[in-house]
Image (tube, rainbow, N blue to C red):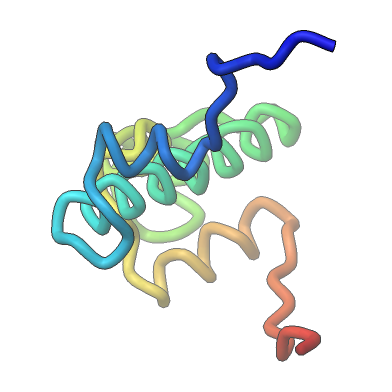
Length: 100
């Protein structure tokens, strides 16, 4: 069997591109990635509910631009707004202790 030297771990790729875990660069990347994922979840749920950004904004007491920025991952909503958005979309958040 031939040995492959081109295989690497995803952690090594992230370390090379964004710095080691715990560095400011890596934390900034993690935050950006999390914001993007949350935005996509909200976007998908809103579309599934056949709701416009304006409709959602009205339901949660904000404006369309704010919802757009959340969905694009540009900003991170505060906890209160996040829960209002989740509720308006018929979603649920469970807070549980991890299994150790």
